Length: 526
Figure (tube, rainbow, N blue to C red):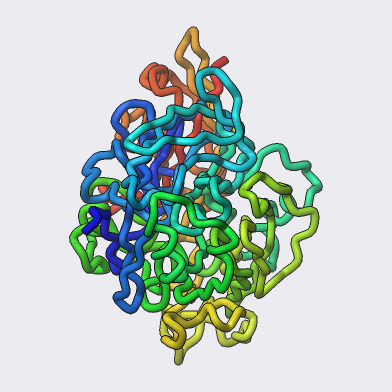
């Protein structure tokens, strides 16, 4: 029997690893799981491996996968994942990767490669769009500069689209400098549709609540699996012809982040620090303790009214997808397309942001959509908050492509389905849902003087400033937020010279060990 990594359906999923400047920033997801994996050294190492992926009905399908190779507890958390680990970087950061081809020769399916469509890679000081990694444990080291903020797909571009659909794909999220920016992108014109939409969050009557929080993200990677075609693709060292792979392709399983049905409708991102009651397996429990975020627990969405979230949708499969949510409408804010040959297609920020309850995604599409988390319009304002219905209020998300709601030809609803939920009405006085925004963060090199200005959505409280990350040295615990939600700090901060970034935090007044809000930002050296 061939040696393969086993992807157990009930516990595997996306892992998140931050690289470059982001490596020490707990900024991508809220809650105790918001910290990315620890990397050994400054280079991220990815292995391509054989994998046996368990489907929702217990069927095991031979596939290929990416595996983190240089993280803490690699065997437990860095195992094969389909999709591969989410890589999070800051725009402009220099990123180093080593990709190793550990797929067995007998099941290689031909050559394998690596690309990030739309991103130039550098190999031995040469700029290339993709690399080929030979069999037998060979590796290639690549570098690249993190591109414009947005959502990207990394993948094996060879033998398109076979290798991508067979599991060799993952997500690169590039974040903008958050100082003075309330959107997921950079350089938006003041009057642009997306900038105006994000400006309205928390300020317009239609969007009561908070501004968008950079930590309020979700990722949905859609894929389809035909076990018979997967078996053909992995049965030989030679590559299956794309025409043969696509011919009579019969999708049997429809996944979001590698899961479907019951398993894709679970989440664990609402627990208090140290509360693992939502976790049902050892791997997930330890992932919270040791800091590897498993976004499998974040397929379904939740929050209070007034906590907007950005959903980054990627279609890695072969079918058109039509995600549809109940209870709210979403706003399409950015789009990218990967062509059929896995080359980069168009990429743009939306110039118009209509309200949609369904958004179309052809194979290779990437859509960022904003879920506003407003009070559902079918509930009359006079009946809010509801008395008879108890929180959380649950609403489904399913695909309007009917076949994708099943598994193995008839198991309903065990396909590409999940839900979102409202945990409670919005409480503007609750620091747990507060958002810290920083408009200025300057550090004077000669004197060590720090100037920080910004806003917190809960007025009248105190904030802390730490040098570096949340566990870094304390600069001050006495930053007063005034009655209008504004704050400013000016003082010496030599402790911040080494890391060149700071983290602002609000601690629970009764239990200081619990953090309600946090924001890490780079410093502008002047």
